[in-house]
Length: 339
Image 1 (cartoon, rainbow, N blue to C red):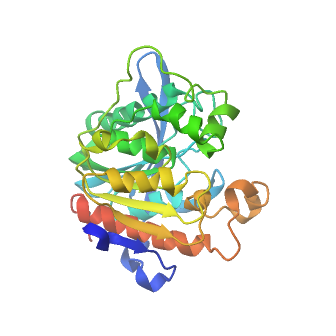
Image 2: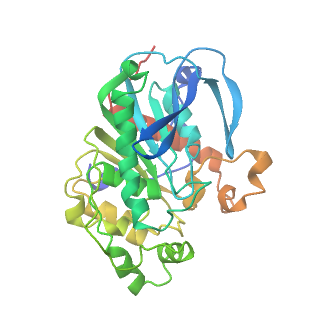
């Protein structure tokens, strides 16, 4: 699309109208465990077109209106995988998951092992970075080949949405190969970089020299489109490492992102991809503005997650975000049901 694809996102809902008919569709929700040989299973949340009476439920810091364990409706339902950032969970992008389901997709959100809101045992480690895309591969394989509802799915292709470290995960999953040796290089020249502080505070090994055999990165051929929101560790992807990435990409970044600065994250990804992404810049937003608005009753207890810069309207932004992401996946995945 060239430089014309770069867009400054104006938070006016008229620029991205909601699909009124889709908003009335019941959304089913269920949790499944994806098995791993000799390891703890992967927890996954599924949102999908369904039938029945939705009930409002709390889900982490957020809420959703869903038919719990409702039936899957439709055929050839396209799949979109959601990968959260550090210390997140399957709930981290619930508003997007619901919007995708209302638009006729199945949204499958993983809880990454050892890097979630209850377990940080792998945070800051190389093992976490290598395991994340492998978890995505296992979930995709399970949905297409084992899950009881697989007969409803559009087989063979899927999309992926990743936020922060989930965007790193998505880039690997669509064919990118990072060079983890770039992490100690960054910390040697930018000791105050937020990435280096995070690794140090979590006693991780990402900032040290690599030892042992090179990582084996899991790529998922089924992915035909990707959305990257505020990608972290973007500097680990060299131009050669991104050369195999050929799927359409929608790239989002926050104007005031102090956790994954554009200069060595989104900016480098944008410059090194073989084809320019569709880019959206969110004025006044910070890194965690990509998480949904918190439930009012919990917002004051977790200000680091739920607060925003003065004048920034997270609820209005998220209506635009989910509409644009749904539009993008509609354009690049199968043909979601329109009835």
